Length: 284
Length: 129
Image (cartoon, rainbow over all chains, first blue to last red; front, side):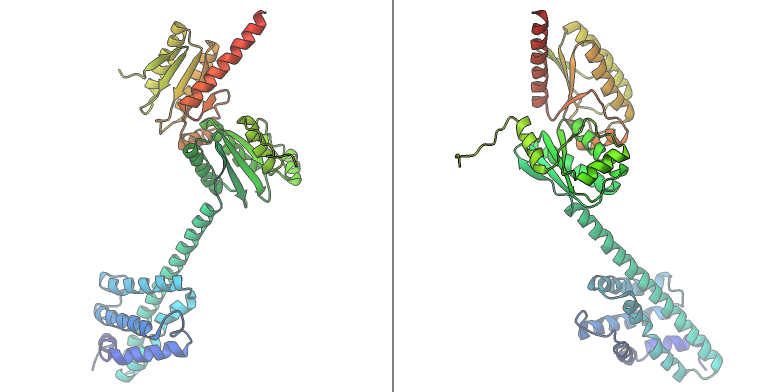
C-alpha cells in the first residue's frame, strides 16, 4: 500500500498529459480559459510547462518556499507578471493555479485506499496549491503596483513641460495640484532648462493649478528663490481672482515675487526687461 | 596648503571655485578675498561656482558672508553659474541668500557688475555736482 506522499507524487508525475487536459477543461468551465488575451495554444504551453515543473518539484516535499521549488515559483511569477500587464484580474490569475485542485483531488481519490491516506494526500496537495496560488497573487499585486508607480512617474514627467517662449524666456505652464514631490520634479526640470537655454527670465504659469494653499505657496516661493539663486528672474502668472483672495486671506507673503494676471502680461514684461518692443508690421 | 586663486581683472576680482569646498578652504578664501579687495581697491567681485557640485549650510552661509563683507568694503559681489542641484539644496536648507546678486554665467555676471558700476558712477557724479 502506498503512503500519502507517494500518492501525491504519483498523481502528478504519472499521466501529466491527462492532468493537463482536465485542468484546461476546468479552466474553461470556470470561464478563465483562453480568450482574446491568451490564445488556446499559449495557455496549453504554459500549462504543460507548469505541470512539468510541478512534477519535478513535488518529489522534494511540500515546502514551497524551498530551493527545489524555485523553478515553479519563477515560472508562476513570469505568468503572473504577464497576466497583470494583459489586464487580467487578481481572481482570474489565482483561479489559474487553484483550478489544479479538482483534477488532482479526483486522481488522489482514485488511488488512495483508506480515508486516512486520502485525507493526508488531499491536505498535502491543498497546502502546496494554496501556497503557490498565494505566491502568484502576491507577484500579480506587485506587478500591478509597479505599473501604477510607473504611470505615476510618467504622469509627473508629462505634467511638467518647460517651453521656450522666446530667446531667453522659458515658461512652465503648471497643471494640477502641487505637492512636494511634484514641485521637486517641476523645479528640477525648470532649473535644468534655464541652464540649457541660458534663459534669464522664467515664467511660472499657474492658471491650471486649482487651489493655492500655504503649502503650495511655499513651494512656489522655493522655486522662485532657487531660480533667483541661479541668476535668472522669475515671474508668476495666471493668478485667478479667487487665488489672489486666498493668498491674501492666508497671509502668505509674496513680496519680492513679480506676479502677473495672465501669461500674456508676463511675456510683455519679459520683453520689456530684455529690451524688446513688439509692434505691428503695418498700421491697420 | 591649497587655496582658491583670486584673479584681478581691471576693477574686478574673479574667483572661480573649481574644487569641492571644505570649511577651511572657505575660511581661507574669505580672508584672502577681503584683504585682496582692500589691497586692490576692487569695485566688484565675481564668484564663479559653476563647478561646485555640493554645498552645505556652512558653504552657503559663507557665500552670503563674503557678499556682505565685500559690500562693506564697497565692492559688489555677483555669484554666477550656480547649478540647479545646488540651488535646490540651498533653498531646502532655508538659505535664500537674500542680498546676494546672481547671474547665469560669467559673461552676464561681468555685464551686471559693469552696469552697476556705471549706475554707481552716475549716482556719484550727480552727488558731487
